[in-house]
Image (cartoon, rainbow, N blue to C red; front, side, top):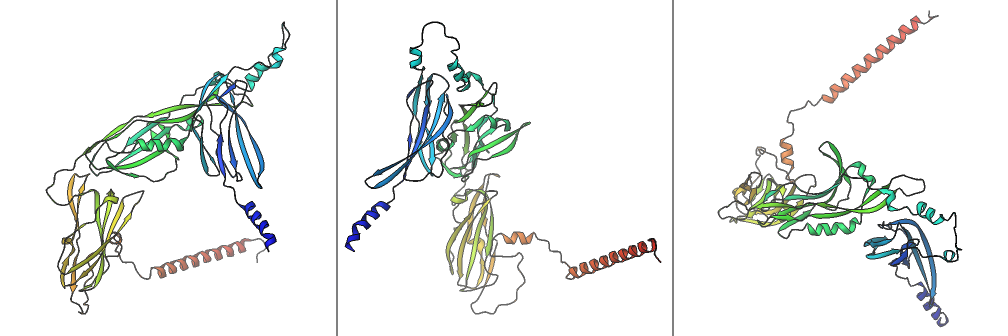
Amino acid sequence: MALFYPLLVAGAGWAQPVRPRVEVVPGPAVLPVTGTYTLAFRLRGAALADYSAFPDLEGFKKAGKTSTTTTRLVQGRRFTELTITQRYAPYGEGDYAIKPFLLTVNGVRVRGGGGTVHVGPAAPGPAAKAAPAGPAPLQGVGALDQLFGKPKPGLYQDVPDHAVLLLEADQRQVFVGQGVRVTLSFYLRPADQAVLAFHDFDDQLPRLLHRLRQPTAWEVPAGEQKVLPDTVRWGPQRMLRFRLAETTYYPLTPQPLVFPSLALTMTKFRLLKKPEPGVDGRLAAYRTYLARGLAVAVRPLPYRRGGPPAAVGHYQLRESISHTEFTAGQVFSYTFGVEGAGNLAALPPPVLAPRAGLAVYGPDVRLETDPGGPGRKLFRYRVVAQRPGVLPLDSLWQLSVFDPVAGTYGVLRSTLRLQIRPAGAAARPTAPPARPVAADPFYPAAIARADAVLQPLDVYRQVRRYATALLAGLLGLAAAGWWQARRRAPGAS
């Protein structure tokens, strides 16, 4: 057994995995106009699954990609390196900025760029130095190469677009605690999609969201959204709207909400004046769109004497109870539900007034949000009435609210009055309640709106009788037609 121990150790060392690494390989800082600029990434220790596209560089045209695999054996370990290289051909001489970009390789994001490339004149070759003096006809090979292989920017034209970046608010004046929805949207015509594309959006969006933050407001984002367009009407024109960001702000102080102007850089393609086969008809450039800033005025709440702070919102009470008959010492559940539009996440529980002979436990809080409508917040209590008699719930739970639409204060209180029977008393038949009470706080209203007209119990029997009579009539008509056709047929007896 000892003879094989070194082999097992060596085998274990050979099987140790190599942690994959991804790095960006930058191109040269100086190159001639006849040269090629390159961007590449190198992957070590893993097989290539997928990777994102290389960026478009201003002043350069993509000229193909190459793939190189290198295997090395170091101290008994095998290392494999895969290099994917994107080549770029310059359009002309000058200094070009390589803006920062992100590449995603096998789910790993790496950053590159952030430098300047100087494209100088073409270096003279050995053939040019040894050329004899005198006229030399037919020396236009270099000019033809530049004409067909590397088009100049002057061959492209800038196509006007009608895109605009807008920062919009659904209200320009709100109360403290009232929500205002602010949306950053990019509008463009459907035809503009041929010349516009998002540039480095994953890196630009966090910076835009950071500038939209308000230190004096409670922010509720609309959730993670995919940037997909929807069609809207802008006057007589049909536009595509990309909602880049959408947040609801609830001011905490009377200070106004001030949103600065924002800038979004897009890829704007210039189109070839005279399209030719085999030549890329678009030249990538960049254009920055600006959105004007906006301000939302915040009004303080009207003065009110004493009492607990009021919850701001357009709310309604949705209550429910777990029983219809109550006995002293029996536990029942009561739900105080608030439904409507407002900052439900910050909504406090209702004020509970203490009462002798009554034990209340809770609440258990549940928040339900609906992206397409109002939300609701439920406060569920467990109650034990220790004394018989009438228990009015309106004197126990109350919630002060301020309706910003009407501009008035109000109080949400229960409308239930419970009759508590003594412990051990037999249950007496009682009349049905004036309104249905369910465990769920939203079924009573739906049941109250339901149609109460009685329907006959034999409706299905009547339908079956009518259907049988109709089928018998159709069969009779068919038999009469068949008999008439048989009589009229030639040769019929």
